[in-house]
Every structure is written in structure tokens, then in C-alpha cells.
Image 1 (cartoon, rainbow, N blue to C red):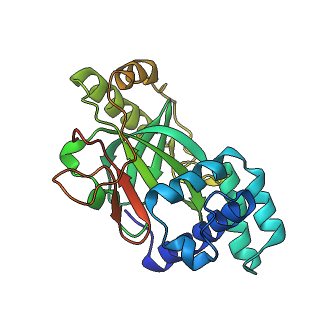
Image 2: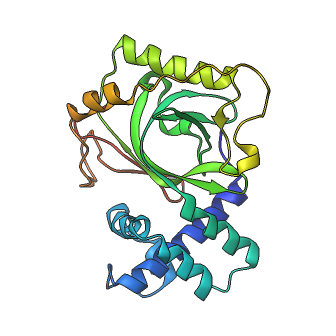
Length: 242
């Protein structure tokens, strides 16, 4: 349910280099002078740079063109593909051996963890779980970018059944998206296709009634609003608990 440790290290080497480049261009964190400095920044600080990055994909193209870290063509190709990121709200519906199942609108994704699998970050009893994150292509797979925000939402039986049906329909029709590469978006089997039910209007109404998390990190107490996992992965949770 996660990429190899070697690939996870590569991912963060590339991501921190890209975000450091963005910070140097936009002067968001003025006290950061080196890539090592940036790697040691807090989740809150990195989150501000992260927002700027996804707000202007031209920054990715500029990084690839300027290549400030003298990366190989292979590494630059990985970063360049990140312009195809998918950002927004997802429902983690279940954990499989290979990946976690993320559902957004009518799309079902197979998403892999980085240093840790999602089953190490989230207790299975919390599923389905509504999160905000960014999905990225990485070496023919789909990963998240190291941050995910958790919403304190309770789902009733109807929504749970709807999400389960969306997963089963995608599975039966080989429509689980496991890669952003066109030839790998699900196995191409010629069989009658069942329509996916779009539960998002109802889900969004439910989520609007919930309390969105805050980004203030706490270093004491029983509940955290920010927790770091592994070497760069952050789960952000509500102070009211999940």
C-alpha cells in the first residue's frame, strides 16, 4: 500500500527541491536560505509554499526549464508530470493490499502511500474518511503529496452504501484509476459498463455542515491538529477529534 523507501526518498527529494524553488521565487519564507533549511521547515510553513505551488502550475515548468538542482532528465520528467495533479476532496473508502481507494465525484483512484501506507496513518474503523489532499503521478503510480487534511464528518448508512457501490462498480468495470498515464487507467476489458453513481452533491452538503480543521499545531495535550508521519508526511486533524 506504499511505494518503496527508496522511491519515497526520491519523491521528497524532488518535492522539497520544487517547493524550495517556489519559495525562492515568491519570497514566502524569507528566512529560508537553503534546501536543507526548507526541508526542516514546519508543516505550517510548507503548507503556505504548497498552496502557492498548486496555485500556479507555470512554476513547475519554470523549475524544469531552469533545473536549479541539476537533476537528470528522468527526475525532471517526474516533476514535469506533476502539472497534472488532482486537488480537492476525496473519500477514502477502503484499504486494499496494493493501495487505498479514494473516491472523488464519479472517479475511483488507487492511491499509494509514501513512507507509510494509509492503513498506518488512518485506523480502518474511521472509514469512510473525507480528506483534502493532492494526488500526483509518480513512476506510473498515483501517490499523494505528503499532506492530507481530515474532516470531522460522520457518514450515515446511505452514503456509506453509495461509496461502496461506487467502488464495486468501478472494480467490476475495470475503472479504478491506478495511474495518470492514459494506457494504464484501469485494465481495458470489453464488458458492459455499469454507470457510477455520483454521490458528491449529497456528500458536499454533509461536509458543509461539519467543522473544517484548523492548521494550528500543538505540541502538548491529548489531541493534535497536525501530526507528522515518516519523513515529510503530514496528517492534519480536527481538534474535536475524528
